[in-house]
Length: 208
Length: 208
Image (tube, rainbow over the protein chains, first blue to last red):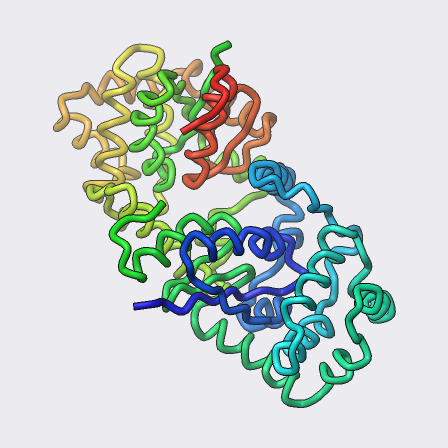
């Protein structure tokens, strides 16, 4: 019995990037492929009444300092040395996420995801600016005209909305979220449990 | 070089209980003793402008359901089968925490902590009610008269306030919080990192 594993992501989330970087190792160890599901984090927040931590905890002493420390520790522990905070954060990712859906439909998804995540969380690129994003894609050898034109088509817009709506129906309130079958896991700190759950649902008596 | 390890707790926190149950195993594996530091969670919230998750996320769809699922998974994973949600939650723990400081000064701390945590998070006792707490301590063979009288003395009250104030000065915003030397770790999900940090600071090249 092979469980479906789904990775719900938005390029604007640094923790989604951190998971993205570690997923290939989990895929290799479990011999399971992750299905990538583009969702719009802003849409999830609207549908759930949730807010980004930087906003929700803005007035809480010590909390955001700890969150930053926790992220630095994670980056160091997993040797994600290419990670760099994006100075343009928070970023409007609507066009970028529609682009992800477009490349899922038309091809080139893996390459597109790699280029966008790298520019967002390694190269400190202002990817919320459509002209800058266009240039970054072009520089990486992608076809931004084709991708962003397709991104404006009704079926792409609808798919992203539906992905987002269904994610909330299934229990999502933020990203990164990973589903292993119907089991939901939230955040960068659940990758160990995700891996264990994949193995358990795959019929392995005991995980790593 | 042996790091000081401090466990900041309030009986009212279920996650403090869950950590408390797992700390002895970590003490054994690392051959390090944890110093228990009674703090008042309500005081920390006031000093930091933080709020309990049940209040902060009351209007956020899916979030608290996930938190409950996450706790059930933790309990199952670590086989903490005695854990039972306290129906009187949230509990006013001021007297109980003063009692903890009192027993730290006068003796009987370990036994007191064990009895209070067990009644709070295994036996569903209404420990915020002084009469019920009195009866629970008496039933367990403790001397509630002596403990609760001592709990009202100025030095005990002052110590609890100072513990709480200093915790916030050092970066705390909630409980459970664990310090390994000056390194701060928040929440039930950081015990693995705590153990690794103890070993690292103790001069072990590599952890478990």
